[in-house]
Amino acid sequence: MGEDKSEMEKISWYRLTEDEVLRKLDTSLAGLSSSDIPDRVSEYGKNILPSRKRLTLFRVILNQFINPLIYILFVAAIVSIVLQEYSDAGFIFLVLLINAVIGAFQEWQAESKASALEQMIKLVSSENTGHNSRNEPDSNPFSIII
Image 1: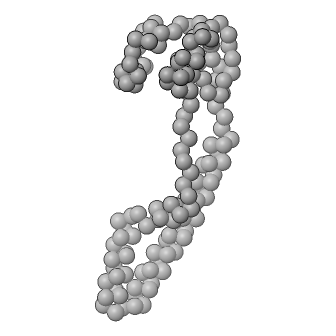
Image 2: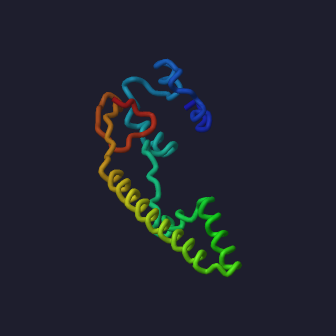
Image 3: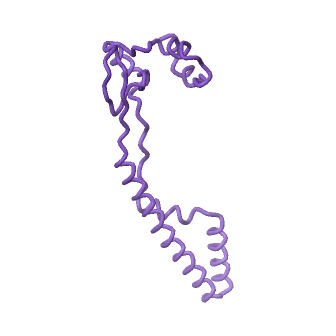
């Protein structure tokens, strides 16, 4: 192919005509030949979306404390301890704990449901390769998608 991989990423594909796209991709409306497919897949990889890594429960809990308001409350609790206002400090720490538990529970549920939805979704496309039409769950990047 005439274009470098990094140059391909910079192209505004939606602005090109059909013929320009086919020329830049070195393909035709008939699709890639069966012999071209392995070369393209080895050079560019399969045309699949990357799956995101699922958060661990520890990370979800830790995320509950990454917030400027939480930092302020934590500093207020430390100041309360220094001023020997232990009941105030205890109440602030209790609020921080309840916030973390509720937030972690909600975020963990959302992560679990999003993961379940991701497992349910199977993207399958019909691709045109060398006058043969086939259904592929992970077509190559230069397929003509029908």
